[in-house]
Image (cartoon, rainbow, N blue to C red; front, side, top):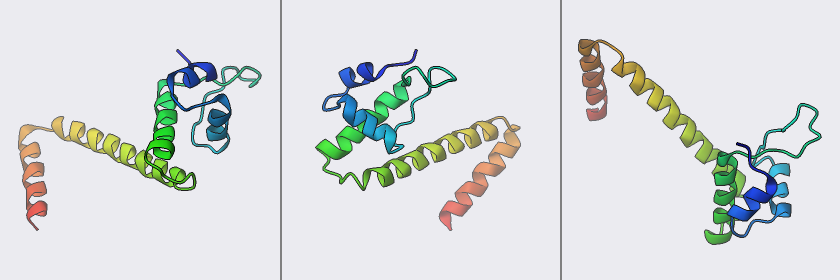
Length: 114
């Protein structure tokens, strides 16, 4: 279910419609268009809600400069992407035959030790 601007603003303290629209215009939050013609207001996901709350926390509670927030968000996005890739890798390794999994684990351990 898509959320509206009003839903997001109601659930994130210190967030106004204007501030949310600034985040969108800066590309920090990317809502989905509800209709192909883009005549309807944008729809927001739970991830957009979480991202709006994160941005507010970074700026308001943690004191990060507005110019630093896009860099921080980019780094956080990269971490999430790497975690997803690592999860996919682990699932692929777990699908291998037991003897191959053992070999992979031994090689990883050898590399960790130097």
